[in-house]
Amino acid sequence: MISQPTDILESLLTSTHRLTRIAAQETGRTTSPAVWRTLSILTTDGDLRVGDLARASRVSQPTMTKLVRGLAEDELVKRIADTDDSRAWLISITGRGTAALTEWRGRLADSLGGLFADLDDDEWTVLEHASRLLASRVGTRSDLRADAEAVSA
Image (cartoon, rainbow, N blue to C red; front, side, top):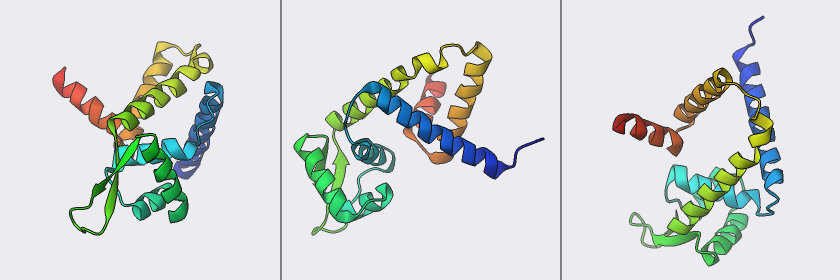
């Protein structure tokens, strides 16, 4: 029996959320997921006002303001003037923030090595295809990197 698209998507969402939680727990780090979510949003969506960043992260504006303050103190984000409204500020990820997010994602992937160690080449090919398909649908930077790598190859 062929699964319905909504069943497949529900399973995919449930599995990816659980996979992320497992990976985060395996790293042993205690950094709030809100930190990584915020840096990730800034990476994929670009510079945003605090209110827009709060909406994208699904938190209140006061919560995001506090989070951004801490990220700025750690030099992971910076405030830049909004050229469309001189009274407003945009939040931008810094090079240090990008490096921290890249390192975190690498740790997450490394922490899952044992869980996927028994996959054969065909299964890795399926996961690679699924990864590229998902990236193309949600507009992540990884699909842009993959496209750039394909062009330069």
